[in-house]
Structures are given as structure tokens and as C-alpha cells.
Image 1 (cartoon, one colour):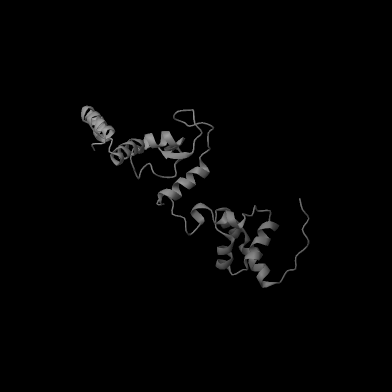
Image 2 (cartoon, helix red, strand yellow):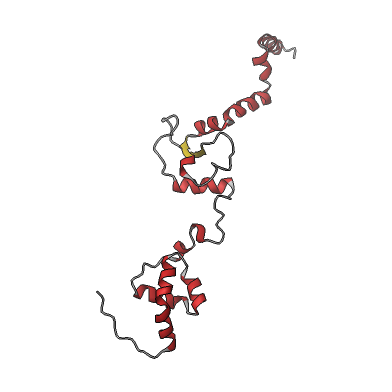
Length: 178
């Protein structure tokens, strides 16, 4: 146990702090920031931090104080898609291989729901998995759309739909007719 030097008695502020200290420590341990405790009880923030350290209370760093729900800008699950994907990437352990094909290195975090669903599009790690780009596009249905759109752009849809017309069109192009 650490020997503490004797304190001067009779200082009104010191006596008031001594009286409020158990309440301050309790509130601090329950997540209340030292800055708000200092404002509430009329002390300087450094006084609160100094006394918490003196009482061997684990003091949170300033960055720990503003994490997650304690940050005034925290939106919880009501967050935009890009920010949610960034959060999941930082909190879901990345495997060495894609969880679907087990071949490629995973690049994307993908939501398990087949379409956007507010119930599963949240910060619950069981709703997410690491996939390679190909498996992610297949699971989202984007690969099918990509193939369909590229065929339409190149005019290849008629070749698959009507092969005999397509062959005649190719022969005409070879002869310089069309």
C-alpha cells in the first residue's frame, strides 16, 4: 500500500471534494466522463483526474472517453452504408481465405441478407462475412447484372437470343455489307 502524505484540513474546496469523491468515483466507473463530472460538481478537470489517479482508479484516455456511444456524433445502427462497412472491417477478424470459395484472399465484407434489410444491416458481426470480390458480386447479384449490362452495351444479346441471325450478321460484316 502506498503511504500518502498527511493532507491539510480546513480548505473548503478540499473538504467538499473529499465529501463528493465516492460519488464522483462511482459515476466515473459507470462511464461518465471526467469533464462532465468536473462541470457538474464545480471542479477543474485536472483536479478530478488527479484525484482519480490518487485513489488508484483506472483513468480512461481522452480518446477512450469519446468512443462509440459516448461520442456525440455516434449514430449507432442508423449509419450510412459506407461507414458501416468501414466499422465492420475494423471489428470483424479477417480470415486468410474467402469464407465462400476458400480460394481467394477476402477483400470485402458482405452482409448475409440477400437484399437490403434494416434488421440485418447493423453492427452485429453474425450478419457479416469476409468474401473475395467475385463471391461478393455473385452473392449480391451484381455479377449477373454486370454480365447482362455489358452484353447490352456491346449488342451481344441478339447473338445469344438468335444464333442464326447472329451468324448471318457476322457473315455480312465480314463481306463488308453491314
